[in-house]
Length: 79
Image 1 (spheres, one colour):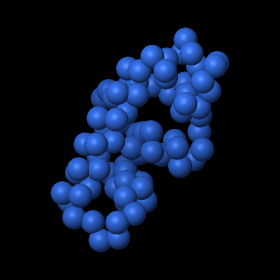
Image 2 (cartoon, helix red, strand yellow):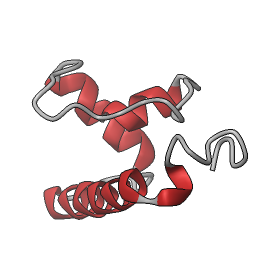
Image 3 (cartoon, one colour):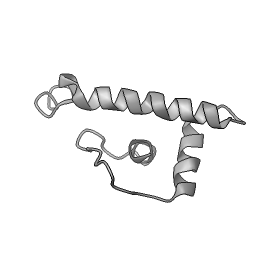
Image 4 (cartoon, one colour):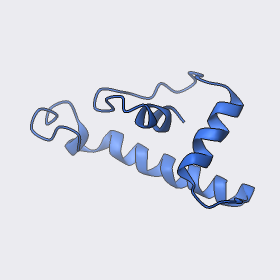
C-alpha cells in the first residue's frame, strides 16, 4: 500500500524505503488503493491476495537489487 499510494500521488519512489511495522492510511484507503491497481472489476479475495503477494515479492526483490541501490541512483534515476 505504501508504494502504491506514493506512486499514485506521483511521489519520488527512488528514496522511499518501506519500514516494516509502520502503519499508514486506513484499511478502507488501503483496499481502495489496491482495487485501483487491480483493474479486474469484481475481484475475489483470492485475486486480491494473489496480487498483493506477487507485488510484495517483486518489491522485496527490487529493494535488494543493486540496480535500485543509492550507489547507482544518479545514473539510473527512476529505474
